[in-house]
Length: 217
Length: 275
Image (cartoon, rainbow over all chains, first blue to last red; front, side, top):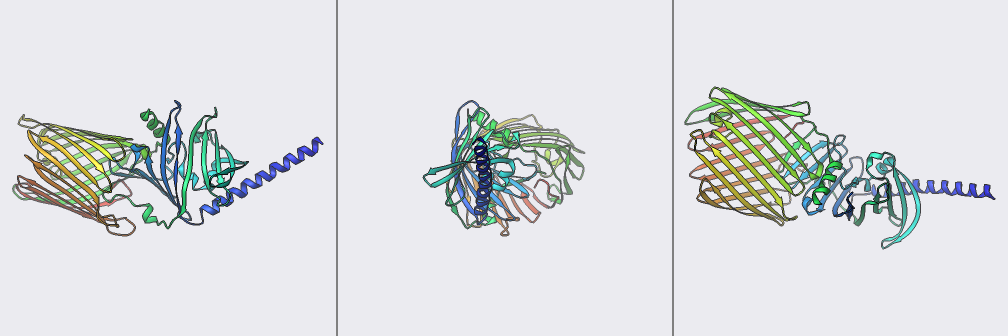
């Protein structure tokens, strides 16, 4: 009986592992189907226990020459700032000084608020950094969703565990929660207003014409 | 608390920085007093910093600068320059930074001759010059600005200046302000906004009162890939002085009048460096 249970448990584990591979493949295929945009809202908890409201707009053009743009709306001090990420470069625009700083992708760190926002748009990259496993399913206002847990392969990512909800009917992330080693929430972000959009590289690279451009190698 | 938040973000967004190079050749001509000189400006990377040098007839300047990039949160840049010429010598230092809702800049310069004698692009003033600028975002739409300046000329005449401004951003940005420059009072009106969908941008600032100056800058993209821009700059002041600048595809022409006419032609070669 014990042997049977062990076999059943191992089989279940294998099925779960296959499931998570299939889910991430579906999410990746869905997000790479066409350009899309979404709003990321939520709260970020600081080490002192306080929280900060966050509101970003994420636009992604998938494909060989992937391009992503993150526009900051909250916190208000960053409103008007944006980041554009391509395979080769990272652009950081600072509204207050009207400066655009361009750095090679390899040298620029693009994390913000404890989470690399572009990983929500690039599941392939996420699976390279985090070991994922399926926890089960959950009903959400958008419909049934998969609950996925993740642990970073590299401790330098700044969190100890991750939980992602992925919509089943249209495989894409609905929310992401990051926790530290004492299970305290570091970031709790929701991805809403997801829609396919006719985005162009020119639109994502748009910047004030008079911005001072500073290239840093 | 907010500051703590930005410090946390800064630690996460900290980016490595490096520098690159560029070279500019120019020819500067001026009437009354007559003066003609070639100009050369160069920047080179040096151990994570940037070495810059500039030459003109009878003067040269060498400077060193660097920057700390903090991703979307801000940056800190700093630099210093020493200039030496037949007419005299000069020192300059500047630092500026932006971090979340705050931006600040600090500048100090001293020369024992007119700074324009050491570099044609500098003002025809000598002695000590100090400047302090700051901007603070009250919220996402409103920004306060403050500029303070102090000068002690070669003749030993001291003067001060101050300007307070308030900018409101909607689709366009409107700026109101008040200033005083060496006991001359003036009001400030500014407008900045895009004129079309291509992204043509106009910024105009009028200072009027006991000091009168209009500054306007028009920038428009020259291609769909937004790689090249045409930049036009105009400044008109009373008592009569004016400058007109045109810049595109690495070429730059600056014409000026401040009691005498001047013309400066430049071409910039960039090797992937700071633009």
